[in-house]
Image 1 (cartoon, rainbow over the protein chains, first blue to last red):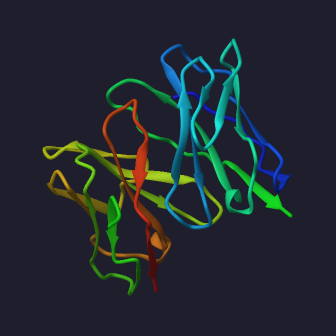
Image 2: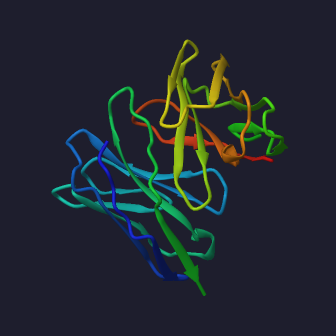
Amino acid sequence: DAKTTQPPSMDCAEGRAANLPCNHSTISGNEYVYWYRQIHSQGPQYIIHGLKNNETNEMASLIITEDRKSSTLILPHATLRDTAVYYCIVLHTGTASKLTFGTGTRLQVTL
Amino acid sequence: DADVTQTPRNRITKTGKRIMLECSQTKGHDRMYWYRQDPGLGLQLIYYSFDVKDINKGEISDGYSVSRQAQAKFSLSLESAIPNQTALYFCATSAGSNYGYTFGSGTRLTVV
């Protein structure tokens, strides 16, 4: 599975959009980009995933560049409850694929 | 009730003791996983199972064993606990390779 690179930490003011970047320059054609988050020491929570088209759900939007070498997770109106570690993971679609976590980006939402 | 339930939530045990962490799910998923997390780090895969008769080692399986008793149950055992197995342990399930994982709330294990 392709390796990802994320900034270790970011800050965002409450009510503003949080844009979390992820580089995955070695991604291959059949690998998806997944985003999870972990609030404090709770179990990770699935946010969104995509292959090449931009995706949106009730939690966030995922923007994937045309060459698929990077992506951005957007939380449109960040709240204090969005403070968490966000993990960008590239996952092969093969039957034996497993999630492999890096160290993620620690997002701090402030008043 | 939670989709993925882990027991116990917290456990302190002594070095050399055998301990079992349990995981049960109501999602009806075939795939189950055990991860550990050390402070400040991401999750590392210990073992995974794609169905009841399938068990596979993950990145860090040494010192651990698992049992898939049924589709809904996947247990992790530490045969002889040691202090560097002190960590947060998570169980997860998924419906397949193109689906998100659902994680339990975790078991905080301390080996003294």
